[in-house]
Image (cartoon, rainbow over all chains, first blue to last red):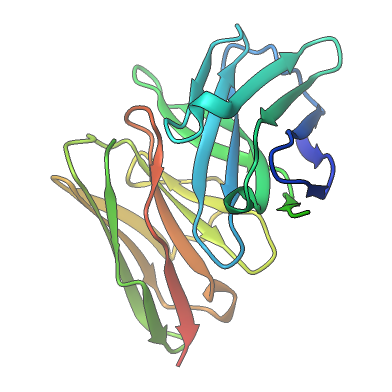
Amino acid sequence: QLQLQESGPGLVKPSETLSLICTVSGGSITSSKYYWGWIRQPPGKGLEWVGNIYYSGSTYYSPSLESRLTISLDTSKNLFSLKLNSVIAADTAVYYCARRRCSGGDWCFWNFDLWGRGTLVTVSS
Amino acid sequence: AIQLTQSPSSLSASVGDRVTISCRASQDIRNDLGWYQQKPGKAPKLLIYAASTLESGVPLRFSGSRSGTDFTLTISGLQSEDFATYYCLQDYNYPQTFGQGTKVEIK
């Protein structure tokens, strides 16, 4: 059974870079059937889509984060990562990594079917 | 960006009740919508995709439907383990967007 696990610092100072890794076990991230995504949730608030990456390396970012965000793949280690520059307090959130799956026959209905447990990142000096 | 307006933001219900949660898209998104359940301190869980297809392993009391740009999640016979927050998510185009969430509480 494929599993995802987030890891990274729990505390980041304002203006610095938030770096997270999502390690994928039990399956390859190079399958053409999936995207790999990041979703975040500020404390007590709703879910916010951050961005996705395809096995080819194509990336799709939230417009509100795009100027500060980089998502990349490391196929040799079967993981993908998130880097968010110049963080502010509003970037404090639980960050989830997830697998975006194509379901259906002739038409792909995409959905996030597997999620990591999430990791809390606090931006504070 | 496509906006999803989810309602109500919260509701109180009793075990055995029939519960409906709505999600309205700001434009046509065909059937590209999913429903997720989130319990406190846990990751979201996929319940329904393609507006009405039940994810494997999800109880049959959960169902989804679509009428134009209006989507509905129905729980027929609420169980104690169903008290949670529910989100819709559109997968029609980028940027992907979530509804604001509906918290289902015990009456």
